Amino acid sequence: MEVGTWEPELTNVSACTLCVPASISPGRLLSPSVGKNHAYQKLPQQPLKLFVIKLDGSSFEVEVPNTATVAELKEAVKGVFNQSPIDEMISWSHVWGHFCLCYQGQKLLDYKAYIRLFGIKDGDQICFVRHVSIKYEGRVKRRIRLWRKRIYDSPAYEQLVMNNHYT
Image (spheres, rainbow, N blue to C red):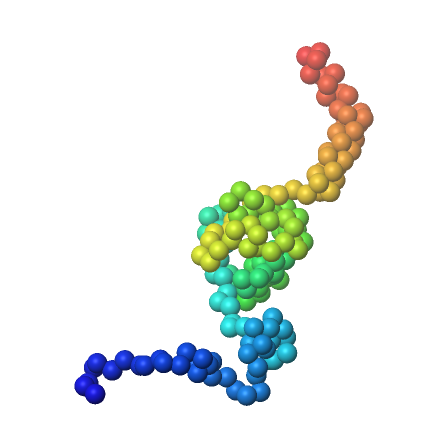
């Protein structure tokens, strides 16, 4: 036999078998329940690195799992600020009541939705946008209506109107 010219000879194809431990039958290899019966761990997923752009144009980075929901993304945003003493001054209920996260024009309002369903990928930019909830809008309109009623019903307003019309 010369060096470099060796080729395997397969004369008996039926003799070629898959080398598997005797405890695993070939039928079990094709069975969909193999992963269920044996300890199986997925490879760890790389987290998504996202850039969050604030209203003033500055940005910061957050990391979330590939399987994160909008709620988990919001928690990651809060987590960035938990590292600084300024967090004590932030009212997150106020922040989330007036602003929301947005990706390519889509407001991320459903906190149970998976962010991957919005098409968010590693390295993408998420931005804060102004958002007024319907509940808050109703309170503001009611507050304005009451404020106007108090002003219009006050004697000072009547006198102001009379002075402006007759001077």
